[in-house]
Image 1 (cartoon, rainbow, N blue to C red):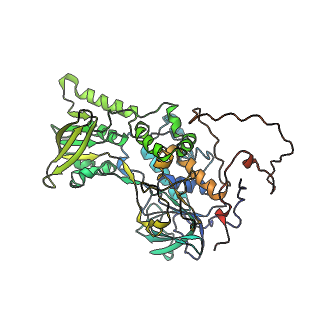
Image 2: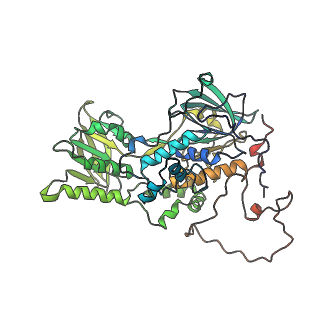
Image 3: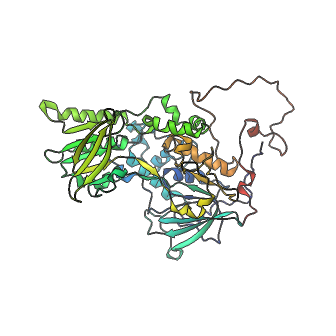
Length: 516
């Protein structure tokens, strides 16, 4: 068993004078312990939990001018599907200055929230909370695009080429004109990729004008374009699709408007939200899932669609109520709901003409066609394949399907010449299961990464906590007599408390200061 890594000697915390968003210092100034690329909620969580740790010098960059979380779906009345405790830090460090409750206190909203009496907060407020954290952290830098990543074998460092891609917003610009720059290369021992996902548009819609068909990720910005469209089709029945349908049902639109809602799933089904069912979003289940054979994982994930691609019961109820109210006194619902249907092709005679959808009912194997004046595609998101990794593509370990091989500490497999580590956030659905995009596991995953980076010197990770036993129960080991001669001292050469508890420590060279 490997010994725990001591706190990294000589690692400096970020200078107290480094202004929030000032931009990473020049290459000659420092070598980072970790650089995060992408600043969605997950890397923002990592930045927040790393803040103040003396053993970690970190910088996080994102090409966007400021933090923004799914702006196209920040509709009035929509809430998070997880409790507010699933903020950036609380489930690991509830005393953090970057908690949601700290945000409320900073904005004098604690009493208002107290009387609000809701466990699930408005999405717009979650976005505002994250923007507050992003502006306050000294390690987050917006308006900066990471263009390439290279591995310097001689130095044992990653070289990250950065480009300033515009003016940052919300106070994220450099503090003075003399600090402006256009391109530079920074060095880091380790990387964390938090590139998120991108809207997935089915191949059937590849030839359709974007003026007539667009992804639900852009719905809020483009909702006004639908005002005069008499026939609107929504494709997809996850939470996003349901929220779009509910919003369109609230708006009567032009006379004669008809709304069609299509989904491949067999029903417009509610999300699994029972207390024991939700234990599949615990670290216990993540560890269990990671230990399964990859073939079994690939079978399980699509079968678990009601855990992450269904609809919350309140939204289903609202849609039903809106349809019911439309039919009072003989009224027409002006809506068609079609579960179990696949859109096989879409065609359009001209950019301004109607769209014809070639559909098939899956159970009946019955083809039919629909026409629409506009289509909203609530068809989910797909993992990004960033070109910035192209220079090191040959050094990365991929599985038979071309996906990253990712270990239980969220490290991408690499060739032996790469001594630095590449961690991923929300790119591990195939290895860690449906909890990968879940906000409730974000802080825990960040803590696991920091634990690996610091040799267990960052945050205490929670022990197994689920009531459910995932997997076959392990036999209870026979009771051994206590050996009073065994020490739990941390003095070198004796068994540590962490070792006695079965902790697995990272490679002792993780903070090797022999490198420049």
